[in-house]
Structures are given as structure tokens and as C-alpha cells.
Figure 1 (tube, rainbow, N blue to C red):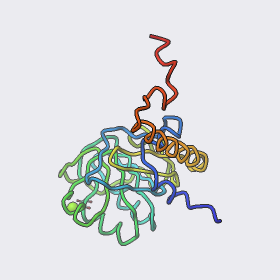
Figure 2 (figure 1 turned 90 degrees about the vertical axis):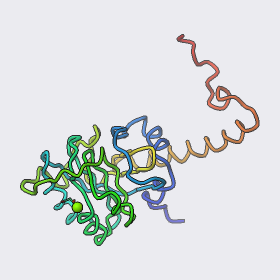
Figure 3 (figure 1 turned 60 degrees about the vertical axis):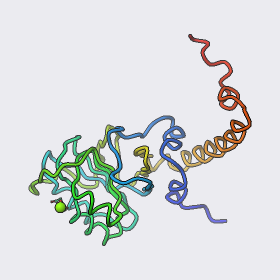
Length: 208
Ligand SMILES: O=C([O-])CC(=O)C(=O)O
Ligand SMILES: [Mg+2]
């Protein structure tokens, strides 16, 4: 059987499991929240970094992105309208899967209406200029995590995790094993086993 595509495998997992399997790494600042609920976004990163209040790099990143890509924008936590309906319509045409930004977005009702998934640091109507692009498709720090173009991104209701491309196979194997073990553990918990038994925590607290 052909090996499954890493993006399909990632999309079947959740952010918490992948973060744990990655050695408790890769989680973006928890202030980066989805504007919609119930969605999962999985894909490879196309990155952009913005100067405060200037979204030219985002417009360029849309042109650099292709089908299935996830835009990861570093905006230093600045809340302005770096992303909105116009960019989403252009991104959708190119098959872009969604956006993660450690800055603000706007036009959120329209974004939800068209089903374009966005994780952002907040909502702001404040307009951005289009004058200078800090970088496009270079490594960035977004939400406190170093993200390189081509890294794997998974986002769900809990937040966002990024896995370096060099680690993806090992992290997926570990995450799937963890998920299968958790699922087996749920059956035991429902029959009355304790979390100490199921998680092998009997010795926990020795350092109290
Ligand atoms: O003005 C911008 O570039 C951001 C925006 O609202 C849109 O894309 O609709
Ligand atoms: Mg707009």
C-alpha cells in the first residue's frame, strides 16, 4: 500500500495530540484563535512577515501560494485588519486552504460565510497600508514559533501547531500511536479504571 500523504494523516489528528507527540513543541501563542468553530486546517506553510500596519507581504504571499497551502503570517501580535474578504477571495481562487496570523483580521462574517478558515490574534477593522513587505516565504516567528516555508501546520478549535518538515514522519507516527492509545484508554475509563492506571501515573507525586 502506498504511504499516506502526511497532510491527510495530519488532518485526521488534533492539535493537542500532535503537540504532545512533537515533544510538547510547536504550539503557537494560545491567543491565536479561530474565527469559526469546528474546523480543522492542515497543510504546508507559505510564510509572510509584515511591518506593523502594512500588509503588502500578505498580498504577495497569496501570489506565492498554491492549492492546499496554509498562509502563516507574522505580524508581531499587532491588531489591524491585515486580512479580509478581498484577500480571502483571491486566496480561495488559488486553492489556499486557510490563514494563520499572529495579528488581526477583519470582514469576519464574510470569511465565515465563504468558509475560509482563519486563526488570528484578534479582530480589528483598522486599515493597513500596502507599502513595504518585510519578507515572503522566508522563515518567520509567528505566535512565538519559528515557521519555515513548507513546514506542516495543523489548526483546530484548540489552536495551532507547527511541525518542521524534517520531523513530520516521526511526529505523525508518534501522534497516531498516542491517539490509538488514548482511544483504548477511554474504553477502560468508561469501565471505571482511574486516570492513574490508564496513564501509568501510579508513582506520580513522589516529588510532593
Ligand atoms: O485591505 C486589505 O488588504 C484587507 C482587507 O480588508 C481585505 O482583504 O478585504
Ligand atoms: Mg476588506
